[in-house]
Length: 108
Image (tube, rainbow, N blue to C red; front, side, top):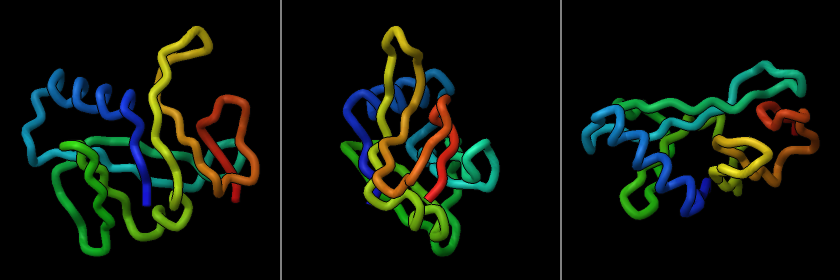
């Protein structure tokens, strides 16, 4: 299961409103090869659930991931930071054995 922090839920909802996405849209979270640690996180808005996708819902915010990515993301919390050290979505992934300094890629 993937969880979403309160700050991340608020930011996702705000972005969806800004982009005029209707209730058919959701946040697609995934993992792809690349980055300095081997795997990179991917975030995008989508409106098509594909066969084998896993769906999670948090107070009206729907998050979907493909079957392969859920193996890397199981237990991960998606958070949003807006502090002095940077602004953006952050993945608190207990499966990551190492991450790069920017936090955008990881290894298991």
